[in-house]
Image 1: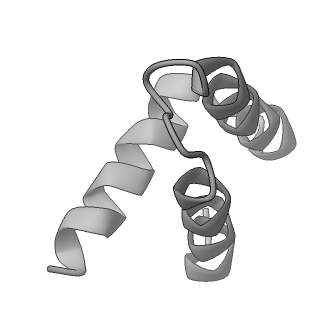
Image 2 (image 1 turned 135 degrees about the vertical axis):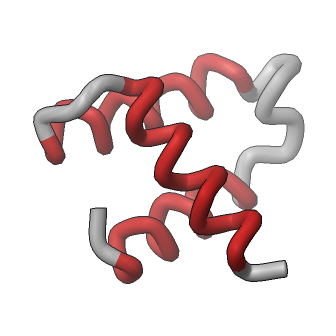
Image 3 (image 1 turned 30 degrees about the vertical axis):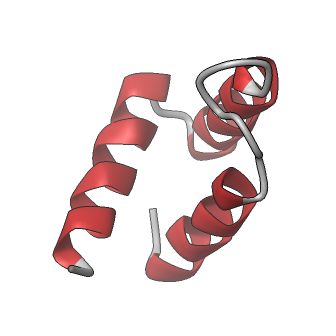
Length: 57
């Protein structure tokens, strides 16, 4: 994924108020949509996102 795609993904994820509670279906859909778009697994999307997020600190 490109930096811009990851930034857009981050913005969508941060918009979810409770991503691991009631917002989990929305969170899961965002990850799934990116996986389908990039033809990679959902795990790969999360892995790339987490690596990017950690590098920002």
